[in-house]
Image (cartoon, rainbow, N blue to C red):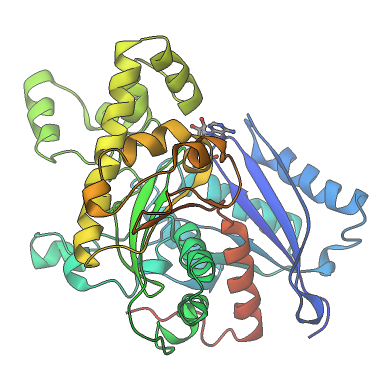
Length: 404
Ligand code: ADP
C-alpha cells in the first residue's frame, strides 16, 4: 500500500484537537499533533489546522491525506466505522438533542472539512461501536418493545478509549492472544481464539466525561453510560444517572420547561452542580484540599459511583485481573485513584501508595506486589484507534462494521 496519511480530528464544543498518522509501508507513525481551545467558531480552527499541516511540511496538497477520521458519538441507526456521507450526517442530526454537547460540534466540523477538502474521504468511528457484542441483557432497558425499536436502549460510549485499554492492558499482562482479539474485534466480531483463563479487565475512563467498562477477553460486557453521554457517572457538567421520574415531577410541580430542564441537566449538573460551580476537576480538588464542603462532596459522590460500576463488573466478570485508570483525571489524579481503591484489600485490590503518588500521565502498574488484581495507569490513545479503523475501512470498505 502506498502513501497513507490519516488525519484524526477530535471536535469538542469549544475545541479542536488533531493527530496526523502515517501508515505508509505497513508502519504506524504519529507525525504531528496539535489543537486549539476556547473556540467560538470551528471554521478558522480547521483552516489553521490545515495550514499548520502544510507549513510543517506534513502535507503539500489535500490529496496527501488518505482520509480524515472522526471519533463521532452516536447516530440513529448507524454504528461501527462508516463513510461520512450526507445520510450519516443526517442520522447524527437526528440524535443531536440526546447528545447536545457532542453531536452539534461534530456535525458542524464534518461539514466544514467536507467544504475545505471535498476530495478527501471523511470516515467516522462511532463511540458506540465497541459495545456491539455486549450481552443483550446488559444493554436493554425495561421499556415497551416499541420504545426499544425506536432506539431507547443502552448504547455505551468512550468506545475508542476503552478499546485501546482492552488492547494495551492485554499486552501489559502478557496476553497477546487477547490483545489480538481486541485489535481484530471490528473485523471478526471477537471470534479470534484465546486461551484459558479469561482475561477480566475493568477500564475507568475518567475525564471531562467519564465512564466505566467491563471487558472480558478484549470484548466489552457493558458500559456505565446508557442511552446518552449524559448518563452513568456524574460528568463535569452533565447529570449522570437520574431517576427519570424526577423530570415530570419537577415540570409539574415547579413549572420547569423541558428546554430549561435539558439545559440544566446538560450544562449545570454533574460535578459542577455538586461542587458549587466548578467544572474543572483540578479546581474541585484544590477547593476540597482547602476544606470546602461542596467540593469534598463532589469528589465523594464521583468516587462512590465509580466504585458502584467497578463492583458491578467485578461480579459480571467473576473477579478481576486488572483495574485500569485512564483519561485526564484517571491518568493524573492520584488522590481519586486512592479513594476509588480504598478498603478493597479483601477483594484482592491494594494500591502501592508510593507508586500511585508518583504516577502521572504515564503507563505504570501502581498496585502493591501482594495485590491479586493489578491496578494500572494507561494513557489512552483514542485517535490511534480511530486511525487504525479508518485505515482498515479504506483498505476494505465492504466490511466496515458488524452491526447486530
Ligand atoms: P475530555 O473528556 O474533555 O477529553 P480529559 O480526558 O482531557 O477530558 O480530562 C479533563 C479532566 O482531567 C479535567 O477535569 C482536568 O481537571 C483533569 N486533568 C487533565 N489534565 C490534568 C493534569 N495534568 N492534572 C490533573 N488533572 C488533570
